[in-house]
Length: 194
Image (cartoon, rainbow, N blue to C red):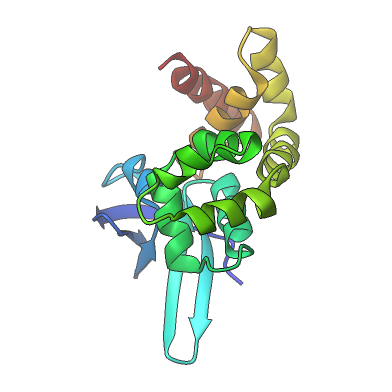
């Protein structure tokens, strides 16, 4: 239905951003980590997922496609709904979540606010190996040439792929393919050097 919405962030709080796209202002519920990287008054692209029930409609958003894929995987875990998935993602970074799942680090997962031992165990059983595989398949293929160039400069491939995904959120609409590639490359180096 909706893949993403591009617009200017008018305001934000701890649960949502308010994105002006054309004449429509969207209220988009997002994980706290994603909200934190999106500055007010900036133009960005937010990847979306629509939650629709008889009594409720809610739009969820994510800073990049990798985060949305993580959200979809969390929804497959028994006992985790959309609100719970957003809360989990807001309480742990993407890299820490992937490492905790890969290493079966129950202690790290239990430290996430609102995440109990049983749910953390279910997450490890359901998602071990999946998030890393999804991330490699999505980001690397999308930016393969740029990831390769950054890797040749000595940057880690995974970190380069993440930096390019972040840079994608701040890119302008009216760029040619060459300008777009230069912009993404430059911004990725900025992210990687922080």
